[in-house]
Structures are given as C-alpha cells and as structure tokens.
View 1 (tube, rainbow, N blue to C red):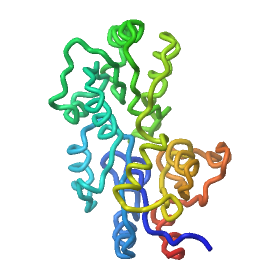
View 2: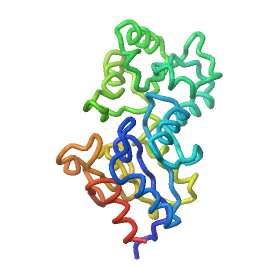
View 3: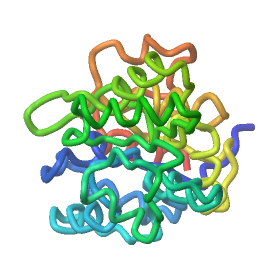
Length: 256
C-alpha cells in the first residue's frame, strides 16, 4: 500500500512565481493545499537575494508564507560556514550577503559561490581561483545551470562554479538542491519521511531528480525554466508531470 501523503515540498521561483509575477492560479492553489492539512515547506536554491527580501517579495505579490516555512540554500550554506568556522570569500550579491551577517570574511580560507552577476568578472573569479590553488575549499551554494527571469532564461551559478573547478582541479562541495542533505533537513523540519512526501518544482534535475533519488515523489511543473522534454532527460521519470502548480495541487488532492 502506498504511503499516505503527509508533506509537500514546494520550489519557489519558476514554480509559483517568476520575479514579481505570480504564476496564474498559484495563490489559490496554495490556499487549497493548506486546507488539506499537509505539512508544507518551501525549498529554494534562490541566492540572488536574502531570505528576508525573498519573503517580502512573495508577500507583496499576494502569497501568505511564513519565514519558518522557507528553507533556502543560503541558510544551508550559512550553517556549514558557521559549523566549520570558515572565513569565506563570498561570491554573492550584496542583498544575499545579509544572510551571512556577522561572519568573519577577513583573510578568506574558503570560497562560497552563489548567483552573483556583479561578482562574475575576471578579477573576482581570479581571486577565487588563487585561493583555491592555495588549498581553500570551494563551496557551491548550488550548481543550477540556468533559471527563468522575467526577460527569459539566464545563466545560474553552475557554469561559474564549473569554471573554477576546471581551472583549479578543486571539486566543489554543493549544499543546496539536489543534495540529499538539503532535502533531509526539510523533511526533518516537517516531521515527514521520504515515502510520505511530494516535491513540486520546475527544475527536472535539481528539484525532481534530487527528490526522486532519495525516494520523494517528484511532480514536475511545465512552468518557469521547464523546457519541452525535460522529464525524458532524467534517469528516473518524475512521478507526475503537471501543467502548472495548480494542476499539481489538484492531483495531490486526489491522493489524500
């Protein structure tokens, strides 16, 4: 007998919104999902802005989401930095750096990379490269290849992390999706196990592939960064492919 669905993990950008635009039907669908009583966590690799800024953005466009319901890859990276007492060179946007407030960044002994268009210039990348050659670890908040902006697809931090890996022969430690530890922390917060949880997202590899790899049912939505045929590029097909978040919630409600 299939495990009863007790929890739902929801990606943010590309799944329920794109920048300041709500993906149609998402606000109403989220309300309906809450009414079922399932545990909900929003899990995001967004690193272009701090958690506080992200929450304000979501609130301003109409979502009712609480801070404790959101687990970001920035949060995971900050915990790792604190735990290892690292002094990172932060390749992050100024707003995202707010999530590292209080961290000692003098005389860096690690390189931390997120989505930072203003930092991906030759001088900054070369500074990071030299630190890696000196033995510093490379920490990728995530390695997303691209994401969806209001004006179309855009490069994520993954290509820049890969360039640093190639040049320095240092393998990056990834802390965000699709890492099993990232999903495991969210499950722990919800009090759910893998078999009773669903992941909804627009990234076939990082959202769905990562979730399915550890036994979470993946619902791939055809919005955001989704491109035709993405589901066929996975080693294991998604549990479901849905038109959008509202359609995913509709199908989940039939499973409860």
